[in-house]
Each structure stands twice: as structure tokens, then as C-alpha cells.
Image (tube, rainbow, N blue to C red; front, side, top):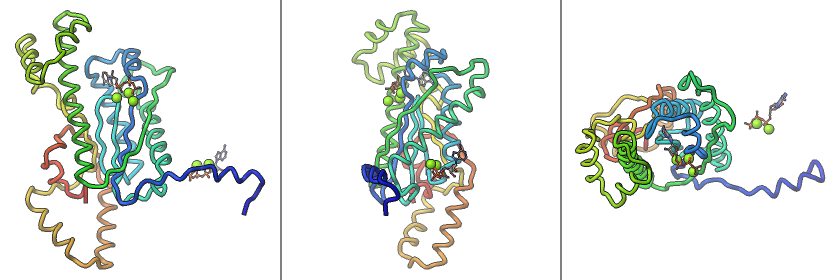
Amino acid sequence: MANSKFEYVKHFEQPDNLLPNTWVVVRIDGRGFTKFASKYAFEKPNDKRALELMNAAARAVMAELPDITIAYGVSDEYSFVFHKTCSLFERRSSKLVSTIVSTFTAYYVHLWSTYFPDTPISPPLPSFDGRAVCYPTVQNLRDYMSWRQVDCHINNLYNTTFWALIQLGGIDATEAEKTLKGTYSADKNELLFSKFGINYNNEPEMNKKGSVVFRDYELVEPGTHNTTIEADNLAEPVQQSKTQSENERKRRAKARIVVEHLDIIKDDFWDRRPWLLS
Ligand code: ATP
Ligand code: ATP
Ligand code: MG
Ligand code: MG
Ligand code: MG
Ligand code: MG
Ligand code: MG
């Protein structure tokens, strides 16, 4: 029943509920951070303070939204993964994306002075865009995470070599770009080592691997969890086990949120934390 003659406008709203039973990834990215980084003189190619600020904001987002299972960040972007059973905001895309973007941005600005104590932040203030994508299978989700981490690796190797040529080699950006054109990973590793004595393997893990944010929970020894999962699948879903799993879920939601720089492409990370994708 309409309360006023104006209420019909409500029907112009389009539904945007995301496909049920799929993993929802919300990826946010800093708007114009090339300029932002130069305004605040971020160290090139990786300003540690800026990366740690991104990580701290992501941690805060995860603390406020227990439905987020895991997050992965690199440069000015962060991907937040909602569990496939998540029903927050009836899975409405605009609600999920806008809540993540505004919560993240608010904390980024709030925590700025902790990471940049000598540089007050001033307009134009940082902002982030965001999008939500559904992944139907665990394999698709893992491939998404692998895609971002491979991207991190490729960009970081390129940027590390590019900035070494400029900062240590004394050449300009145009020349550095020309030097790197058509080179493979092996060439860049070799160039870094032979010209500048830099072993890429010894670069900080945060720069090479990006940052993974998740709830710290007891690790499972590789090879021990598979039988448990199979047994669970065979068992009848009785009421008690539902309560147990609900309690388990709450216990996990309360666990400490950690930021680590691990390989999320190989199976090991996931095998040891089966609750992330179960
Ligand atoms: P857009 O608005 O399209 O995203 P952008 O300028 O933000 O434009 P990106 O592709 O997102 O472009 O690239 C991020 C930029 O921010 C890069 O130039 C990157 O070097 C810089 N940047 C982000 N984080 C850091 C950091 N921790 N240290 C140094 N530079 C950084
Ligand atoms: P949701 O997350 O679903 O939006 P909500 O609690 O924010 O939940 P709204 O329907 O958005 O619910 O209502 C906004 C609430 O904030 C109302 O309770 C309203 O009275 C309160 N509120 C907003 N602005 C003011 C204000 N300036 N002064 C007093 N109360 C306010
Ligand atoms: Mg962008
Ligand atoms: Mg950006
Ligand atoms: Mg980016
Ligand atoms: Mg309101
Ligand atoms: Mg409201």
C-alpha cells in the first residue's frame, strides 16, 4: 500500500542480489593512487608505511564484517572474499560493495596518522572504487586469488628492476622502460643481480607476495583433514552437528585477525586451513 503519491519511485530500484551459493569477491582499488603516491612522496616502488596502512584498514574491515573469510591485498587494491553461504544484505551487490568501500576508506583516513605521523592528510582525500564478482567453485576462487598474487609478483619484479635502474643506475624513466622492453623474468633477475648485486629472492616478502588477511585458527597438519571432510560429507546432517558447526563458526569469527605474506597459489596454505573454504 502506497503511503504517498511519491512512493512509486521505489519501483525504479533494480534488484542486484548476487547469485546464491557462490563465493563473492569484492575488490577495491585506490582512485588515482599514482598521483596520491607522488603527493605523499611514497617510496618507490614499495612504500612500507602505505602498504601497512592498507593492511591495517583491511584488518579493520574484516573485524567489522565477520562474513568475510579472507582478504588479499597488493599495491592500492584489496580483495575481500565473502563465504558462499553469506546472506548479509540479502547478498545485494551495491550494499556489500558500498559498505566495504566506505568502511575501508574511513579506516584508511582514520589510521593515516599512525603510519604517516609527520605528514598530515589533506584534500583531495583518498577514495576507492569497488566491484563484486561471483565465483561458483572453490577452484574458480583459488584461481582468482592466484591471479592477483601472480600479478603482484610480475608487477613487483618489473617495478623493482625499473626503480633500481633509475635510483641506482642513474638513468631516466624512458631509458629504464626501453631497457626492460621485451625482457623475461629471468632477464630481470639477472639484471638486478649483475648490475646492482640485488638478489630478488631477498626482497621483502610483503612486496613479493602481497598480504593475506585471515582469522588465525588452529592449523591442520597436511594430510590429516581429508578423512574428516569425507566423513562429514557422508554423515547425516543431524540437528546437534548444525549447532556444533554454528558454535564453531562463531569461535572462528572471534579468532585473532592476522596479516601474513604467504604463497596462496600452492595447495599448502589452503590444506592447512581447511575451514577457510569449507
Ligand atoms: P586508477 O584510479 O585507475 O586505479 P591508479 O593511479 O590508482 O589509477 P593503479 O593501477 O591502481 O592506478 O596503480 C596504483 C598506483 O599507486 C601505482 O602507480 C603504484 O605504484 C602506486 N602505489 C600504490 N601503493 C604504493 C606503495 N605502497 N608504494 C608506492 N607506490 C604505490
Ligand atoms: P540500516 O543499516 O539498515 O540502514 P539504520 O539503523 O541505519 O539501519 P535507517 O533506516 O538508515 O536505519 O535509519 C537511520 C537511523 O539513524 C534512524 O534511527 C534515525 O533516527 C537515525 N538518525 C540518522 N540521522 C540522525 C540525526 N541527524 N539525528 C538523530 N537520529 C538520526
Ligand atoms: Mg582502478
Ligand atoms: Mg588505483
Ligand atoms: Mg591498483
Ligand atoms: Mg537511512
Ligand atoms: Mg542506515
